[in-house]
Amino acid sequence: MTAPLLVCAADVEGRGLPSALRLGVGKVASAVSMTQALIERRPAWVLLFGVCGAYPEGHGPGGRLDVGDVCLVGEDWLGDEGVAVDDGFLPLAQLGLGSVGPFEADAGRTAAAARVLAVPVVRGATVSTCSGTDARSRALASGTGATVETMEGAAVAWACRALGVPWVQLRCVSNRTGRRAAGGWDLPRAVAGVQAALLRLQAADWGNE
Ligand SMILES: O=C(O)c1cccc(C(=O)CC[C@H]2O[C@@H](n3cnc4c(=O)[nH]cnc43)[C@H](O)[C@@H]2O)c1
Image (tube, rainbow, N blue to C red; front, side):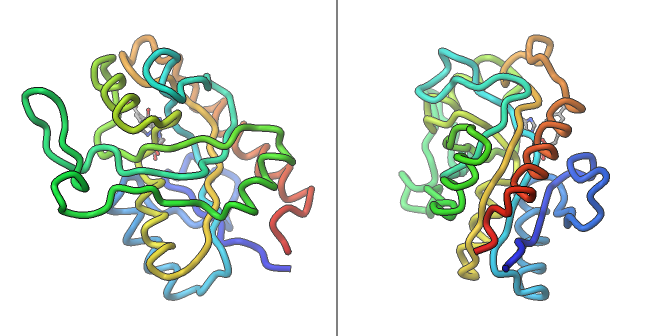
């Protein structure tokens, strides 16, 4: 039996779960904390859980989740690393300056979790600036093909990949991206949703092979 190292970004996501490591919000905080934890604790695998934004229907190929929906992120991308230009955006990779993904989750554990929970496996985009306007949300969704947006997924994945540690990412939608007033924000519902999913996985003895 190998339990994962449970990690989340914001304190609110891990409320009531003292054993979950708080990495901090955003790419830099989460990558540094994750790397430090991987070196110090040597976990067999990592389970990142938390809330996320969902790109609305019509924004891109994967827009199909809404507030309260739970998902697994099967692959994550750095969505806003690059250069903003007059007619759009040049990703870092296109400039030959580094990888922006995909960062792939542990496929076996992800598929098994999706089966237990009966939820979809989706693509994630990780950003430094959340998509709080419709234009920004549309650009990110169509540029990445992602369904959900977070501020840590690909950063945590990068750290795990560098140290050869498998990872799984479980999220519950707290808001639709785009204009904030229309985002349907419900953080308490999303925190409750992701924690309930976590408990269901633990009860099903998922991932402990
Ligand atoms: O008050 C706000 O405007 C606000 C915007 C984004 C996130 C928050 C949080 O309190 C949660 C932080 C946590 O949630 C993830 N998250 C949630 N929604 C999004 C989103 O639309 N785009 C990117 N990340 C999102 C993120 O991973 C943060 O760690 C408050």
